[in-house]
Amino acid sequence: MTENWRILLALALTMLVLIAWNMFFSGQQGIMGTDNQTRQVERQTGDQAAPSGKTEREQADRSPSREESVTDTAARQDLAAQESEVSAGETVSVETPLYQAVFSKKGGVLKHFRLKQYKSSIKEGSDPVDLIGKKASEKAPFGLLWNQGSTWREARWRCLGDDMRIERGEQDSLTLIGEMGNLTLRRKLTFRAGTYGILEEVEVVNRSEGSISGALAFTLASPTLVENPGRYNYMQFLTYSNGGLTSWDDKDTLSQGVQTDTKVQWCGVGSSYFLLAMDPKNTSMYSKGKYEDEIYRAAAESRVTLEKGQSRTLSLEYYLGPQDAEQLKEVSTNLQAAVNFGWFNVIAKPLVRVLQFFHSFIGNYGLAIILLTLVIKIVFWPLSHKSYKSMEKMKKIQPMMKELKEKYKDDRQKMNQELMQLYKTYKVNPAGGCLPMLLQIPVFIGLFEGLMGSVALRHSPFISHLPFTDIVWLADLASKDPLYITPVLMGLSMFLQQKLSPTAGDPTQAKVMMFMPIFLTFIFLNFPAGLVVYFITNNLLSIAQQTWIMRKA
Image 1 (cartoon, rainbow, N blue to C red):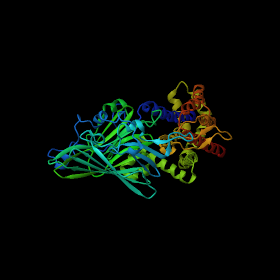
Image 2 (image 1 turned 90 degrees about the horizontal axis):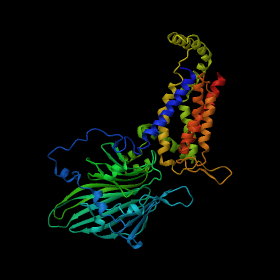
Image 3 (image 1 turned 180 degrees about the vertical axis):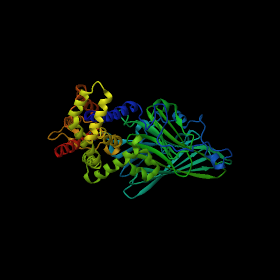
Image 4 (image 1 turned 180 degrees about the horizontal axis):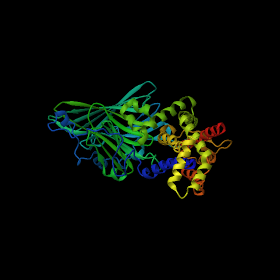
């Protein structure tokens, strides 16, 4: 294998991964799998059907039948435009340093949930991200369902509490009491400053003369939180059970409704950057999800059986916020599974943590990416050094290789024997330039995934304006370069790096190599700016390393 072919193979393999990744997975905005199919990221075995002879508790917690659909019934009974906008006197506002939540006093339906630290766009004065909004509020998120009935409609509610502002280190609660027939629902919502979690404790009281049995369901709803759905910009219904995360993102499947046959540890709706989830605390729950009227919905349901005068308290914690591992851990360690970067998750997560560490004292994610690239380059220096040295050796013996190929062009077996002898004489490994590069590809893909899907880079600026102008430039590392300057610089740096490599003996091969930087430049035009900054930095460091090795040689 000649030096040129080693370079071509390394580039081709890298591009093959990139192209295949985007071609084959561009329509799969979930974590793994194919469209119209449930995707399992890390499911453990053992989800067997429950044995016969269940205990009374298991009977109480049995899964609802397929015919029963929490989301279907809620759809028929939602608020959809049948009610006018709730007036200020009918809502209660809860404000913390992280968010502002607005609830209806009639059943606790969530009207708005605005994230103070996340804006809807990078434009000055843009509104905070609202994870609910008017349209999703019509599907009654935070509304309780009893036997598929809408308690916010059918019960008489009292709200014990008023607008509250919770400062750092504090917590407060809101209580709502609803009476529906012979059933009383006492909802207590507890809010803590510094976390996106909201703890709910629902006491169900039987005031009838006989027993009561029914299904109590907690609900969430979210609008589409992404402008242009794609491989790294998606919405999905999520469940986590038995140590594995499962996702559904195909709208056709979700429009029919999906549900689990096993108990879940949490369930909810997630986008690339945000998560709305429900984490049961003291009871077994099953989950259901649906996409309807451009709204993603989730329900967590448990069976409740009460004898005369009995009561039971069900506890669940909501999470509405960014897909940030530290914040998710505040509610449940299991919720951290929502931060998933695909097949190379085990590599991407540590790289993102290192990136965040650098940002903690640099304060600029663009500089943090450059520093991370430098660290990766240092770690792989021995492999790169070996690769470049092998390339230089191959470059030196290329004239002799050319002579042998010309001399034995009619005898391929003899030519291969002579080439092997030449390699042995000059201690050259034909694959020496390729293997070190191949070993770096998993790290490259892991960083690729981490930079593409990390909420940390969302709306994070590097150089917000083109120097000496008012033109917005790299103001959002999670979006493409609006001026396409960085992709062009990436292509030029790749071209320069190519010029330092041995020239191709074959004219066709030389043309292909010359076309590669142009081809990659067009591919990178719509890549997030943070990823392009990484490639530019990596190319420049590679050029410096290669130049140093050449001078030393």
